[in-house]
Image (cartoon, rainbow, N blue to C red):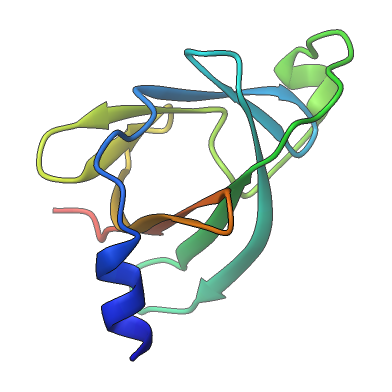
Length: 117
């Protein structure tokens, strides 16, 4: 039932880019804000695999921050949309779009880091 709901509400117009604006606030090419709500780490033999759920929410933007001001983060500073439902991040890793849905007016974008080739 959940899978059927996800298919019905699935979106194909993914953000072309997501880049960090402030700590825990990402911006897309339409100046929409995306907040990383849930992040999980799955340990693997090679390196930890990250998964992150972004929600597109209206947020009051402050001044943009530099990477130095933001500090260390397990998430990349930027993602660029690639073919085949993937993003490439600023650290050159690839992320698979697990799902991108709109439920009750809120967009959720769930990304999973792919293993290195």
